[in-house]
Length: 162
Image (tube, rainbow, N blue to C red; front, side, top):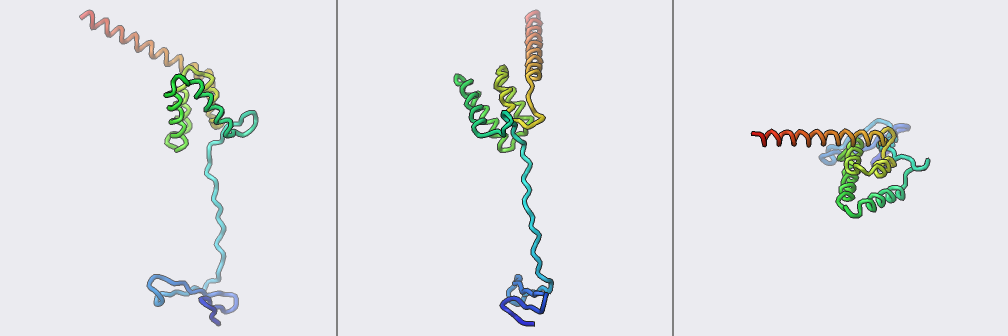
């Protein structure tokens, strides 16, 4: 067996000295043949896939175009645009999920069907917003508001009778 630096060899097996905690008196020797560690490749984290625009993958230009459309639509009410940006920031930071971002965008853009449907460009398959669903939700909300207003009027009339 001959010694070369920190490696001893006796044929096929290499013996390496590794320094352990505690200095030279704590040195250990390995008699196992050196093998390379298996290569492990990182797997990409599953991200929601962006929709396709005209059969092509979504681009930054598509996103900026939609943002510009929203901004132009609400130029007299900048607060709505700012809330939209906040929703998107929360989604990007993963503080809200896909279903929640869709719910909040539909609520924010209520009555602006073109913007709601335009948002479909950014949602993963299976989460598409349908116009009939938007209209049904709006009708249900209007009915609930009308019933609440009627109940308030009825309660106020009873108070006036007392």
